[in-house]
Amino acid sequence: MKYMMFVCTDTEPDTGDAPDIDAWVEENDAAGRRLDGDQLAGPGAATTVRVRGGELLLTDGPFTESKEVIVGYDVLECADLDEAVRVARAHPMAYAGRIEIRPFVS
Amino acid sequence: MSVRAAVAQAHRESYAQVVATLIRVTGDWDLAEDATQDALATALDRWRTSGIPDNPGGWLMTVARNRALDIVRRRNTEQRKLAELANLPEEPQSPGQDDRLRLIFTCCHPALSLEARVALTLRTVTGMSAADIARVFLVSESTMTRRLTRAKTKIAQARIPYQIPAGPDLAERLPSVLGVLYLLFTRGYDPGGPSEFAAEAIRLARLLDRLIPGEPEVRGLLALFLLQHSRRSARLDEQGRPIVLTEQDRSRWDHAAIGEALAVLPPPDIAGVRPAPPATHGNRRSDVGAGSRERAADVSAEECRWVADGPYAIQAAIAACHVAHETDWVRVADLYDRLALLLPSPVVRLNRALAHGYAHSPARGLALLAEARAGGGLDGYAPALAVAADLTSRAGDPVAAAQLYESAAAAAATDGERSVLLARARSLSE
Image (cartoon, rainbow over all chains, first blue to last red; front, side):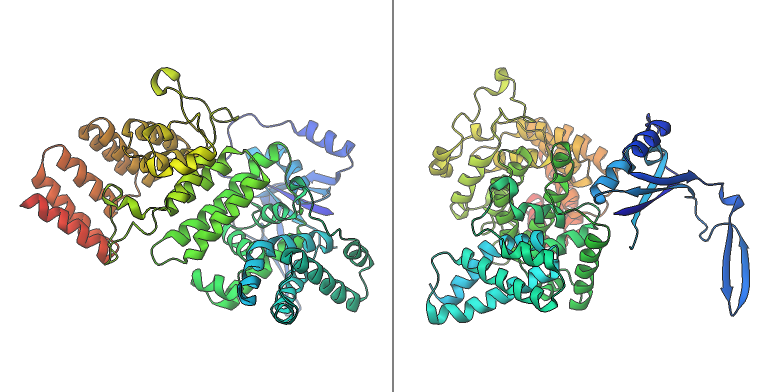
């Protein structure tokens, strides 16, 4: 089962020690659970695209004005949601931010 | 027994088992529910002519499985489900593999919203209809059906596993299950609430205790339910006014339930439960077990001496102190100190203040009450004003106490509560 991990910032981060990102990547790559993933540039570099009535509309910035910002993603291959949660909770941004897990439809 | 009663009993005792097994085998929640409902309808019809079978649960399992087989065959696409259903063993599996437990843990998965967990548990574990659940939660049947469908869709799409969490995961997931049962119970225990909810919550807690033997929080929850439930017919007078615990007619308490509660309270040697220091508490509860059932009518203060660490076990310990002939307020205050660390809710802080007021001095209770009120959440809350009145009266100021009872009466949620509070105000003014 494929899951997308949206890695976001949060206005109320945990201030304690968080796990190391390099160790996280290495472990999940080695286990074949992490298929892809990267960091994203900040929302200042975002452009939102819409087509309305055949006309292109471009907006500067992300599609929702929010204090929480997506700063990265990872694509996981996991047996079920519990495994995906175990992987996500070990990510440093589960401490410093928040992570949304979404299953792929297919 | 009439056929209708026999089917109702089979529903209560076997519904969860049959649905849970069919979900495991087919992975299809709707199919499992439909096949089980069909089997119950068939039972009503068939048992009239051919008699009630010796093993109604086994009968239901077989008929529901055959019904599921029919449905899957008709779809004619799902070979794996077909093979699994055909090979389903007739004998139930060992408790560790119990399908009902998988079902409960899946229904109470924290990735589902709390309201979805409660609805799904009622629907699939107890077999209550969506219409009945909707009525209790004051939503339309279509809203409840949508809520249930959404929850099942999430389970399927996000692939929430159908399994009992193992090792440290179990401890992490248990509170969600217990929280759902607690909500069910309190919903059913509210005056005017559906009393079958309280009974279902007790039944599920008993089942959980059998399936996860010796888990202190499960036992604590079951004991807490039983102790509260034991007073259900003594807590209101003929006019529906609440009767405080100390003035209840103890002969109307359910002493069998109290006996069962005291028998399941976690013994002090289980992990997670600390024995109390012998110097202050002496030998506690060496007599846990069958013996306490017969002696339930004569609960001594010693009965509430065991010490527990989890929030439900602590609340059960407090409830056990309250059914003892003489409430050990020092111990109740100590238990509330610990509960307030785990669950610092306004109501817990309020009860803690009252307990200290009785255990130590009204002044100490009033000081803690002021602290609790400063913490928020108690403004205009009648029980908080009533506690203030009670402690003020005990501190020797009947005039101020009477005024506080009047304010409490003005804030009371029900007429019954109001008339009790006004009567107190009057008795102090005389």
